Image (cartoon, rainbow, N blue to C red; front, side, top):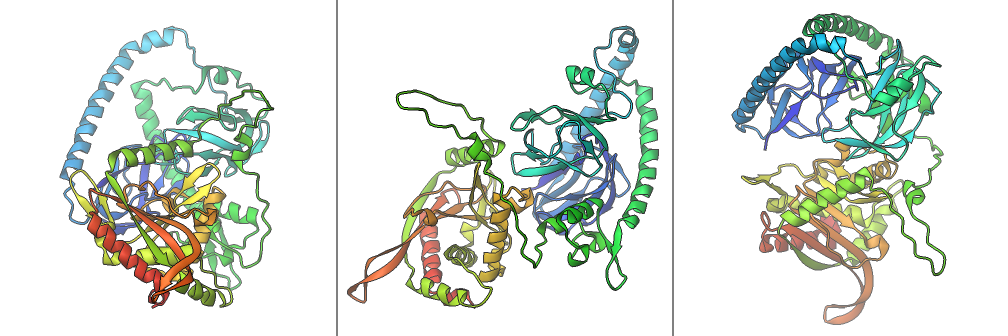
Length: 553
C-alpha cells in the first residue's frame, strides 16, 4: 500500500522547505534509512531520510522548488501501484486549504485595525531571544517527554550543542540547538511530557528578562497579508544567501587525511567525532559523495577498547519503594512514551488479528555441538538465538506466505526478509530489525544483533533501525522460561517465541537417553497464515535448527 511522504519540519521554526537535491529518482528502490533528499530549511540544508521502504512512485516537489511543511513531498509504494487517488486527494486538500487561507486573510485584513487598536496580551520577544518549541522528531510524534537535559538553565549554549534527550513514541533522540546564547528558561522539566510546538526552552543574551514570554507561552505572530508577502520574498532571498553560505561552510567543514585528500563531514558529525575523540579519517561516510554524517560517527566502532560508564537505569528511579509492615501504600508512576506506544501497538494487534499458536519441540544436541565448534574460532561468537534467527530467515524463503502483511484489500508478500529481534529495555520492549537476514551469515547476524541490542539498551537506536520487520523472534530462554506465547508484532503475520534449552530424558533410536530440547511457539495471524502453512513452517524451521550444517552453506 502506497505511503504519502510529506514535507518534514526539520527545525523548530521551519514553515516551508526547499528541495536542494533529490538523491533518489522516480522508480528507484527505497530502503528504510535511505537519504531521499537534501532539504533546505530556514536554518541549514539537511538530509531527509525515509522511514518507509518500497519504490519511489512520485516526486511532488522538484529540485529548487519550495513547499510548505506537511504538503506532499513524495509517494513510496509497490512497483506499478496506482497512486492516482492519492494525487487527487492531495490536489483537493491543496484547493481546500487555499480557500481557507484566502478566507483567513480576508478576515485578518478586516480585523487588523481593531487588533492594532486593542490590547496585546502576547509578549514581545526581546532582540536576540529565541523561543524553542518541542520538536517533532518522528513522523508520528504528537508529544514528547524530556528524558534528560544536557544543559542547565543559565549555561552558555553554542550552535550544534545537544540541549536534551527527548523521548518520542519510537525512541529517545538527541535534540540539538540551532542557536547560541544562554539557556534562559527551561519550559519542560525532566520526566515531563509536552505536546509538539509547546514551549520547550528559551535561549538568548545573558540576563535577558523572559518572564513575559514564560507567562504567555509560545508567542504567535500577527502579520498582515502584505507583511507576509514581503517576508516571503525576503525569506527566499535570505534562503539563497544561506544556501551559498552553507556551501561555503560545507567546504570549510573538511579535513585532510595523511595523503592530503579532503574529508567531507557535516558540522554535527565533526562535533560528535571531536567529543568522542574519534579521528574522521577512520570513518567511511555514507552521505553524498562520501560525506560523513551524524549516523556514520554514531555507528563507528573504534578498534581500541573504550571504557564507558553505564548510567543507572531510568526505571530504577521511577520504581516505587515498598511500605513498612502493616502500611498500605500505592504510588502512581507516569507511563513513558515508549510504554504508551507499546500498549497501543500490542493492543491493536491483540484485538484486531484473529491469532492462533502452534508448538513444537526441537532437539538441540547438534546445535549445542555446532555452536561450541564455531565459538572455538578466535574472535567468533554465535548464540543459540542467532542460530534461530538464521533458521527463521531460511524457513521464510521456503514459506513466503508467512513473510506477509495484511491490509483490508490486499495481502502484501515481501520479497525481502527483515527479522525483528525483541529486546527488553528498562522502560519496556524494543524490536531492532536485521535487514536482509537471509543474506547474512551466522556471525554477521550475531554481530548485528549485539550492535542493535546495545544501542536499544543505551537509547541510541534510531527509528529507522526499528522499522520494516517482516517477521519477529522473541526469546525468553535466558530467563528460564520453557514455553510462552507472544503477541504478533504487526504488520507482521507471525512471531516466534523461543524457550529455554532444557536437559531431560528423551527417546532416541528406541532408547531413553539424556537429551537437550527447546520449545518453539509460532503465533500466526489467521487472516494470512492458515494452520497447515504455520505447521509446515515450523517443520522446516525444526529441520534447520536440528541440522546446523545446513545453515553454514
